[in-house]
Amino acid sequence: MKGKPVINPSQDPKGYYSALGIEETANAETIKTAFRQKAKRLHPDFNTSPIAAKQFQRLHEAYEILGNPTKRETYDRSWTYKRKAKSDSPYSKKMDTKPKVVQTSGKSGGKQKSKAKPETKASDVLDQPVICECGQITAQPRYITFDLIWGRLTHTQHREISGIYCRSCADRAAIRASLITWISGWWAWPYGPKETVKALLSNMRGGRKPTERNAKLLIRQSRAFRARGEMELSRNAAEQALAFAATSTLRHDIDSLLLSLSTYPSRTLKNRWAKPGWAASAQIMPLACIVAFISLVTTVSAPTSLTDAVRNLFMQEHNTISTIRSTPVPKVNEDVVGRVFSLENETTNLRTGPGPSYKLIMVLDKGMVVLATELDPSGEWFRVVTVDGTTGFVNINQLNANLRVDSRKVLEIFVEKPPPAYDDIP
Image (cartoon, rainbow, N blue to C red; front, side):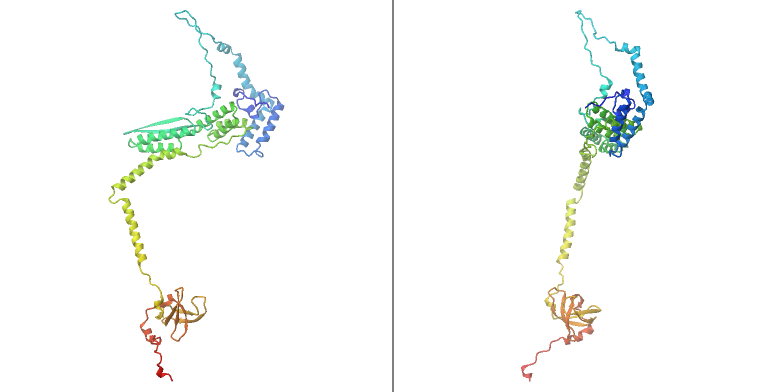
């Protein structure tokens, strides 16, 4: 399979050839074929990617220019004219003429040759991936600034720690900056505490990430991965750059870059910047230690320790509960059988059995007296006998042991008469 053509950015200033994936010498038929193939893959009806619409628009823009011979000639004229003017310049030959050997004379009269140093081109530097502070290449670099505060009586000094970090390096840098700020930031009045709190909050949130600088950083990283042939990482870095693209120029550059990488899938990487991580917890530890120390000092210096106060509170509550539990509860037992009660409610139902579902015998009025003869096993119903000798069950909650004065005269009705003597039996 033929490799994808590499276009020099100076020969394709707007990225039209890169968008179509063709060389600058391609004919009209090649341009049309490339456009149709990519249009099928990038059309929003067939591609669900969130950037497919922008890539398709970019592809259509490139085809409108390169598919029209007049517009293509105008587009090519700018870079072909510059390249020709540079090659015809009389100064270019002078600049290319360099002595290969440099001789120096010494006491011995010998001749020495200086070693030729390899030239470093700007394009070679741009093609190298950016490394973080630890010296490693990272697929998710970030340019971050952390704040550091020094307090000196009435003077507050603010410093910044900036650099390109991976997530691990960023966490260590944040902890280092916050630790120094915790120790030295408070000792200036009146702005020391205020600036210290602001710096600590900024560091706990992960520092400050300038949008434009991070967008350019990720674009450069994407192009470096593309030059190394790591197309999946290149596309992933370009997609990360979209989150920082705040200007139309940056978005245009990223769209062009993504369009040139549209034929390659994006490698799914775990976003290491999505959560705060362990660094935020480590930075808040000094505050937790200060709060714990103040609580300990307050507890020890108090007249009554916190432990004793809590113990007394619980003991008081326990004593109250014990008193309530030890209070005797009146119980209904067999001792009340044989006692006379008066009815408490306006009306009381006398039923054939111990429960509201049993048949109603009669309705008793308030103040009537009854004799309790039997207690139901549930302890809620009494078998009683009325003055007229009717027997039935009533609920114990409807009985009152305190008889009224006018009710006591009927007590003799329930007094058992002595059995007749044998001599009296006829």
